[in-house]
Length: 91
Image (cartoon, rainbow, N blue to C red):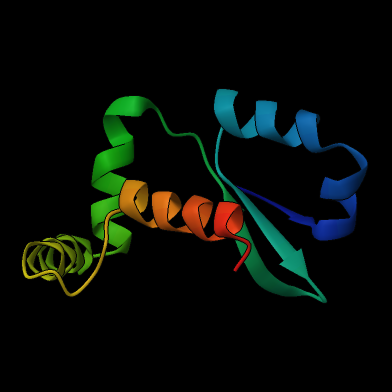
């Protein structure tokens, strides 16, 4: 694992993305404190990563689905249709 400061990352971002992809994770620091992590991830790992970091995501999807089915919210297509109608009506 390598540590670099954010200024160094801004000078050579592709260098560090490649390094993280080919070798190991990189901890990015800001003012001497951990700020972010640059790590390799592939499509197969992405879902696991998202679910591990956002453990409540499935619950949020279920809440959103319930709201949509109970007409408490609109889907994006209906919302865009309403906006276009308002624009064409001059509202």
